[in-house]
Length: 334
Image 1 (tube, one colour):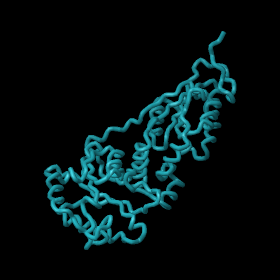
Image 2 (cartoon, rainbow, N blue to C red):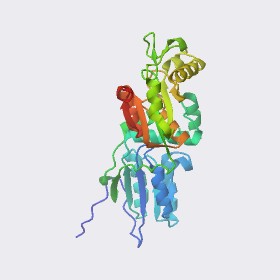
Image 3 (cartoon, rainbow, N blue to C red):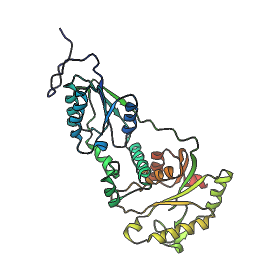
Image 4 (cartoon, rainbow, N blue to C red):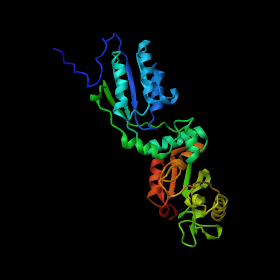
């Protein structure tokens, strides 16, 4: 009497087993989870790779491509799209089962926040800067990795966790593994502008013009003392939704930053988010990681050697996403 379990409902009966069944590996996870990196490891071991981003078309178009490879005698194939729905996974399992090839699922359980960092850094590497709005939509026509943060949120909401009863030979869960920073990666200090490096004399959320800028006493001296002989890179970051509304011109914002630097006696590189207060469609509004990703990629920073000085919970969340150390402005400036 056989102990084999019957196939799940809807799956075809398997073909007779071969001497070397091989395997089909289905890598599952959020966009930005690290699937392409893991798939490359399998390719290095001799697996054929099927990926919609490379092949174009729809996800289900990969099923006949898989069938074709298996008919040609390829016994090791890796597929690494998101495969968040059971129905999409079932088509792959059925195609492999028809050739008596088992399917293993590797589920990359990358946290949403880490996936956000990965996507933002990839966007900077591919395009040289962060994209948002119409630019991002236009780039998506040629780059499937160009999309806004709402895409990740939607994927997480509809994701169906893979289970062995779908017909997988095994389901392996793996955490995300970050690549170590380069040996010559640099240290940096990031400090928020509004409420930390400068405040509004009129009591607004942030200074409205150069005459409204007030730099708290002693902050420049603390920055210079902290930098010392190490010449650590220092950056300022800001979210200015008044640029999106037209209340503040980009040139006026640059003048605000320049005036603040002169008052501090420290030269900083300024990065900012100019987008509005609606639900974000950009990557650059903290605590989303875009500004940090931009600096890390542009200057070759080691996140583990970066310190972020901020004022509220959003700054703390921004630092944690990027893997930066965090100090409140009160503690840092004493």
